[in-house]
Amino acid sequence: MFGLSLLVSGLAWWLGLYLLARDPRKPLLWWAGAGMIGYSAAVVAPNPVLLAVPALAWTGAVLLLARPELIRWWLFALLPFFAASFFVPWVVLLPLAAATVLAIRKRAYFSLVGVMFGLSAGAFLLGLLPDAITLPSLGIDVVVFGVLVAVTDAVEEGEAIRADMLRSLVISAFTAVLFGSQVIFFGGPDLLVFTTVAAAIAVQVLANPLASVVDRLAVPSVAAERAELRDAAEALPKRRPLVTEDAAEFARLTRKALSHYGDLGKLVASPLIALTDDGPPLDRAAQLKSMLLASIQRLKPVDGDFGTSDEWRYYNAVYFYYVKGIRPYSVRTKREDLDAEDRRALQWFVTQVPERTLHNWQNAAARLVAADLMAGVGST
Image (cartoon, rainbow, N blue to C red; front, side, top):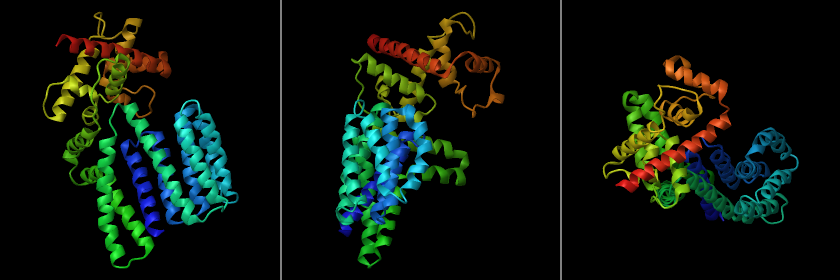
């Protein structure tokens, strides 16, 4: 069973790191990735406490998908449930079962995976079957859950997923086999095989962020340019065809492109890149950025440079937030670097515009920008 455990552990480790590397800023990917990594550790060192990690982490992931307003309460409950797992291991299945029930109406497929995982985990925690059978069998649920999270995130981002995921899996598997087989061939201990495989996979999946760290330390003068080139190369397999017949989907993709306005590497993966002329990926991303700016500028009223009336709200919502990079509700906003117009806009956002209202204005503005882009497509 060693080979099966190694395969399942390595697959879960890869999938967990892959989710984290997709976008470290997304809580959903953190919750799901932590669950994958926790399960991988449980396969190597079977322990009820380690198995509590995926159960508790995936509870958070399912809540984010089905009832995100409850995630704050789950953050408070997380530590007590984990502490209780030291004494009553199966208690961690209770919040997962509750989250699974909540997800039935909105995310039925995640509920099904939650039931599958709960049954298998219950069999392990209650000792109904040998560990050598129950832990590897959980791998099916782990893979299905991880793939569903990755696909859900890709759909939200307007990206393709199959080519990028397959590429990452093939490269990781190759390096894992290359280095892990050497340890096995020379008779190394089982734990060394697991750790060697884990290190080989991590180096491949995290190659881009690791290279960014090294660049910032070794060649800081060109670190940003090198990171942009790497991001563009990584984004190419994620691009999917653009369908212009669906106005709602086109508007959603425009909204997503606006959110990546300052990141050419992200814009390379946008389906809206199909609106640009043929050329190198970064040149096309820069052209798309110019097209978005031109459409945003057409939202600007003609009376003055800045205003706060109703006719200004859509322009202000996207121009100052995305083009100028002002984040009115973030403590990271550097207020001392703003010019007079930016300071007026920031003051107006903070004192007059609730965050939810700004979000709604941005959605409406994205639809207007999308309509403008569509009009440009129709005229060519």
